[in-house]
Image (tube, rainbow, N blue to C red):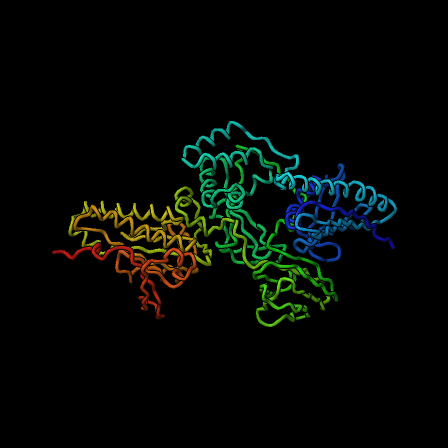
Length: 614
């Protein structure tokens, strides 16, 4: 029986372990620079029956096919890929890269390639192709990473693959973007990125991630991308992410095309779509500005799933012991083949005893409760079942550098610029958390009777202007007006409260010229889950959160804010209201049986309340 050929290289890289792991696991670029062929990947099963990606490529003009098993890795420790070939003198190849920190700035790297040849020709090819060519090219790429890091240059270095920019369209659309009055420095950042970035850098762009890289506020970055889309520089689209692997499984250009559920072939699950995490807004350069070339060299590596800190195959009857050195936080373990899930809390004060997880035929033996574990504690995973398991250990929290549909659809400028972005009729998409503000103009009927229709209408119109400006300035959006009332939404509770304070301040200022007929606005806020729907071609929301917010507004005395505990107890709101007078009270709300604890924030003098008619 043929024996594997084992080839290895050992080197020391002048980079911290974490920096090298993050850069080198961008395997799509590494393999492109190393001269490996681009491939077309489809979900399949390898000859042994395990789930795998089938890759079809051409090497020196000759078709090459292989099955790629899921990557294995432990963050900052190692990563491994295993490929099973068809129709070539090599049966399979495994490439493992192991890392060890020598000191804070130096990493020892062990690169091992194992190849199982089919025959003598395959053995010779293993030595020449993989030992001389591939290993040498990969090491050269790693050295380039090192040199760029030492020169303080981006380690996301560009391969020699960049499509041409159409200067005329770029100049025309950029001129329109500059006319919006956005900061010229921000616009210059974007234009430079669109003209010098790689093809994969100007496709599926994430505004928050790029804003962080450019050193500008995140919301300013999002506004830049929205206005650039309206100017014609960019196209927006919505990616539907899998809740497990968090990779895009569907892409739509308009929310109208969004389905209520989705399916992930890789994880073999069907799930309901929600706006908070599973639907993300991304942008791609418009084809009139730049026609990008898309080539895939590798997928499903650690770089694409940064939330996963460890992933490994666990063969039947084997045990894997990990000491991943996790940062404090909550983690989840799961397997791709089974429905069981579990959580692990990492804290410096946690237990240092090994945490054992044993997969049985119909159950999983695991530590009881929600175990609190030290960062250096051992994690044992044992597989007693007859099938191989892919074990995954991941961060529970979603990354905060994606723009969720919940965030952007609660911004006034988005609703104004992209009013056609609504759900299809009959489709409801859940939101786990949204802050809803309801307003009402107190005694407005009395105002019409007192000052006359024309004057009263002008005052009501002025009050809408104040409200709209305050809501938009604090990253919220007006969903609808109902008579002289407003329903607005915010993705961040502190923004909603800040908007409420600004509304009352604006009304108080307006009242300084109102004489004996001041305006008085009642405001109520609540936070919680709801459902996004299409209501008369407008993105609207319904559910108990909306109903409660409306009822809370009815308890307002005017010239104040009334908050539920879900809003008031938010840390950002607590910080915002520090030093402010807040009175708590308990009451029932119309149509609801439970007792609510509400918080009244005083914002203006009682004298601003409308006087009774004489």
